[in-house]
Image (tube, rainbow, N blue to C red):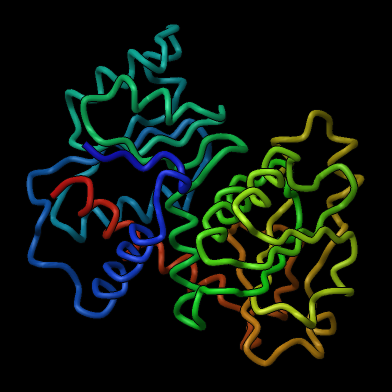
Length: 298
């Protein structure tokens, strides 16, 4: 039984296989209803639009059905049921579980109690493997993944999408430029792991000093919900804003990604520029998650 808990559980061949499978699905579609009579359980304990709906769309396009936990307040967890017991119970109702949870490690814990595959839909500031596969797939549509120069911008301390993507990029010998305000840089343990894996990590507090050398600019929002107090959030919330003027002089083939939702970090005037790929990135969630569901359920 295969789980998708962390991108670190996948080697390069496994990642490339999923990207190739998603690319074939995007062009040719899937065989007729390969997951007919299968049920996907969606357990989301944090708000989500893209992850939840694209998994649901992927499952429906494969001929299967979805079952939602609904709000936590109307589930048995409101009565004090543990996550482990909820997973045990839902394992009897669904063929695969997608779990989004605010606590780091929740998906790993769930996989230890589940009788069916578990896909981590994001665990706190930990990992988000399906988003990382989407990010890699979107980059791959524009350029080879090997040895890219990528800038990770924003809240790199709490941003699970950047943590997950950074680990994946070690498989492709990327040069990572970490751009963040003081106190919100990549965790020391993550930087240690990246450098142990042979990845070059260069830190910046100014985006202007590096943006013209980049192949990919990956922007994230400052996550108000992860800050210990509102004052510290407002101190950094306006640190970076991508505007048309900021993008003057960048490489012609630069691509601009964002896992969304955005707040104020990208000017809407950027949307029509050739660099903007974040809505394409969101659409790519469907074929990538179709590929993942086929891997665990066929």
